[in-house]
Amino acid sequence: MNRRDPLSASSRLMHEPLGAELFGFFRRHGYLRRPIRRRRPRRFASPYDSGRKDDWEVRFVLSSVMELRELRRILVLAGFQPEPSFCQFGKQMQPLYGRRAVERFEELWRSFARSRPFES
Image (cartoon, rainbow, N blue to C red):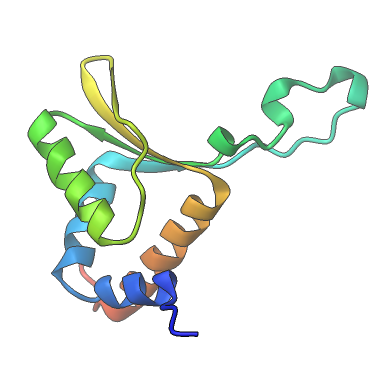
């Protein structure tokens, strides 16, 4: 088959200026969410303990629509499929939901960090 691996293609992109832009946005405006794993009796189970898709999230909190447009462009070029953005507390929110998106983002972050010299 002649299928390209999207992870390796986007990994190569992370060594270029695109990676610097994406992770610059993340450093200034982003954070990761993972589900909290607790051992609780089944009778006390909460819907929030289920490991739902939206328990895993990369989220960017942006000040303007212009920043949001630029970030969405970069995410698409990096091979991500941005979810619909929304406004909360006067800020523009751009999520990437799902465990796969979070793990892929972390892998790209590590790959990008290894390729960059230490910056103080």
